[in-house]
Amino acid sequence: MEVPVIPISSLRGDGYGPAPSNLRLSSLVLQIQKREARGDAAEWGRTLYPWILNKSFAGRTRDTDSETDLRLKTMGWKTAQTAGSGVRAMAGVLALGFLAAVTSQAQTPQTSTSADAASTQTPLPASTRTTLLGKIGPAAPVTYDNRYELYGGINFMNFQAGQNLPKRMNMGGGEILGTYWFNKHIGAAANYRFEAGTTPVLANAATSTVTNANGSGINNRPLVYMNIGMLGVQYRGPKNQYVAVDYHAYAGVASGIFSYSLKDVPASRIHLVGLYGDSVKPIAAVGASLDFNQSKKWAIRLSPDLIFEHFGSETREFFAISGGVVYRFNKKDTKTAAKK
Image (cartoon, rainbow, N blue to C red; front, side):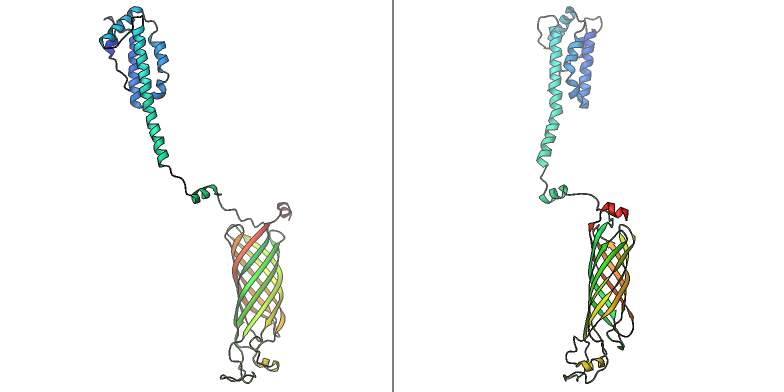
């Protein structure tokens, strides 16, 4: 709806200059047009009509109203034959027309925008909704406040299966380690390892009771394996959010089985092969471990060792290394840990 524009000249008086009330009304029309062009007339127009009634009719006389009625009639407006009725009719039409126009203009884009938004909005997939509802935030810091720690991995160990054998052998297996931490630095550890491999032997003609195409000796590489159990301590050294260094020392026994492939060799001839006899002997390991933290509870460990064994007539040293996964659990009591 368009607001009728009233020429300022039609609102003038009878030749003695503009009437004060008519000038105010003309100024009001100009303000309406300017605000409508800027698009901010909706809110301002809601309070327009009372202002027109209060300001436009103040101090007007019956003669001025009659003159205004005459101007409106010449422009095609219908007026009532009462004092001030022409101006009231004009002001009412202006106010109501302006309110209807600007209100509809302001509300139409909002309605269409809301309708467009509603039509284009699509529901989120179930997986996305689940992700949004899940916990979002940084990973928990690595505090090393666990009471227990488990480690499991694969192991390599260098070894010599006989006192006088000219060559060493390589053994492979697995390792399990459990640690109970008394405080942030000291922990008690229990370690189990299984190692197995084949070893070279001495030339041993006529050692076997079975004769084959290769003769009666043990010419292949017989299998040797060991079960190792040790107890010891761990000391936690330098550490941060990403890596930790632990030092350890274990001591225990190793049960060596050297006769697995010598079933056809009499006990009196086994020494000719050059292997140790089946026995349980002391063994120890000292070394360090490097933990690469994956989270507060999980880490990847690399652990080299120096092995001391006494299967023969002297103590010998060998190299070992293992790699695996560490799992930390059961948080220590905060008050107890603080006292220690």
